Length: 109
Image 1 (tube, rainbow, N blue to C red):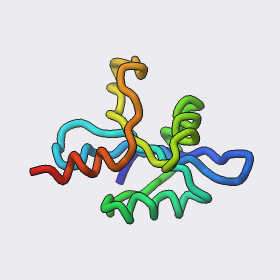
Image 2 (cartoon, rainbow, N blue to C red):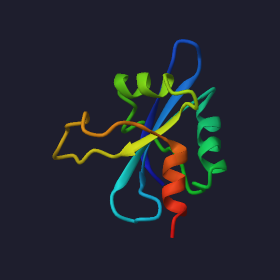
Image 3 (tube, rainbow, N blue to C red):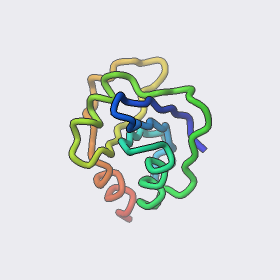
């Protein structure tokens, strides 16, 4: 289970944002953004990548306008970065990464 939220875009599609435990390392968490036709398809995209226990309950942490812009401008519509610490809100430090880099990082021994 993960904290997160979604926002519906004017064209009917949605952007889903989830805070997930960092795969592989176990320390910290990552913020994942997915653009899809609906919430179910967004979660299915993540499950198909191997993130099986991903659920969206409620809308406690919806994506910010900057996050929506970032995911809409990415060709895959699926990006991540380290989740910001609640004490430190400087989000300009880390750039967004394609999801492939997260999956590659967890596959290394």
